Amino acid sequence: MSGKKKLLTRRQRALRAGLSLAVLALLTFLIPLYHVFPGQAVQAVGDWYGLAPLRTVLTARLEEPLSGADRLYLAENEDALVAALLEFRLLSGWDAALYEAVDCSGSDSPWCGLIRTYALPYAYVFGRVDDPDVKEITFRAVYRPSLYSSLSQETVLTVDRASAKGVERDWYFLSPLPVSTAFDDPLLCAVYWRAEGGAETLLWELGG
Image (cartoon, one colour):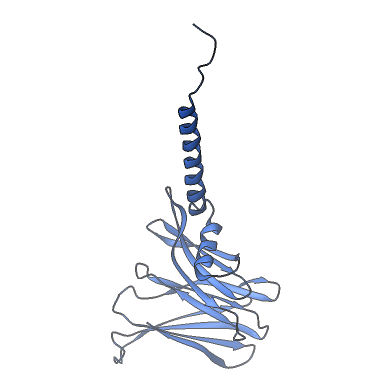
């Protein structure tokens, strides 16, 4: 048996080089799409909105995981606040099952948002406050069989500076708010903020 290695023909070398380039091209395409870390999926949401790089400020786990989606991330940059419900799949890595962004480029602090899925008996409210005079924010969610019905059910959630996570002078929150799971049950959510010792001021009102 000869100890010499069989020399590859020119055609075999060309095929091997072509296959290597094809594999490299496939990996170059797939690697950015496979999110190994949750932060990559959050940044992908930011990229979809056309936002500059985001930094994560808060995380939470769902008490009732939803089809593999069990983590909520709150991330921000100077101009925006993004909440994303993430799920992990073996073939695609981390991905955002649900997400919501709030524009923070204006001077209307505090900034708040709501992320909701009808499959769960609660939504999540999130926000950022950079006004030192704002001490607490109250969410009042009202449900009616119809917009014209006098029957209603109300749930209230209050978040305050003392129990929130602060970064420098800002403070953030990502908290569950009980809601109805009925698709035809309108949700009216009014958001108020209060300064220390002051009266409530309406921030925004959401109907849906």
